[in-house]
Length: 167
Image (tube, rainbow, N blue to C red; front, side, top):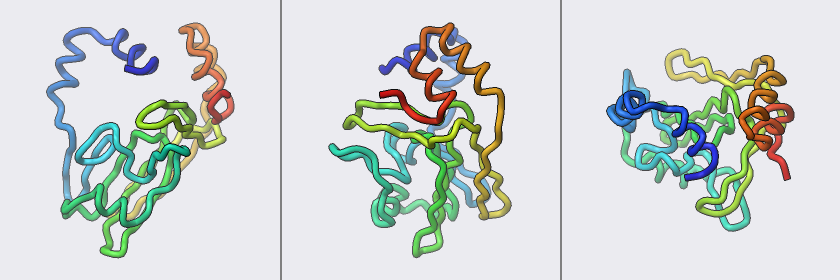
C-alpha cells in the first residue's frame, strides 16, 4: 500500500470500509461503463501504458484490449489522474476526466513513473449523450496544499500548488 492509500485507509472507519467493499467494481448505465482503472483491474490504466521507461499514451490497440468485449459505447475511467478522451475505430470512446484534487504523483508500480498535468486546476468532464467535454476549473489549491503540509504530505502540497510531481 502506498503512502496515499495508507493515509486514506487511516481516515476511514469500519462502517465506511464496509460501504466501500459493498460497491461494485464497475457500473454500467445507458451504454456507459464506469470504472476506476479498467473493467478488469483497479490498478491498470486505460488511456496510458506504464513501461520500464515511464508512462506513455496507450495505443488504440491497447485500449481496445483493455475494453475487451464490453459493448458500452463510452467508458469513463480514472486512476491515472490524467485527462483524456480517445475514440477507437469501432466507435467506442474511453475518457478520463482527470483529478479533482491531485494533478501529479509519482508511483512505483508496475514500474516507476510520473503522472502530471502541469496545471493545478481541478478537472472534471461533462457528458452529454456519448459526447465528453473535459473541463478544468480554478479552485483554492493553496489552501488544499497547506492542509496537505499539515498532514505531512509535502509531495501532495507541491503537486497541488504546481500540477507537477516533486523530484
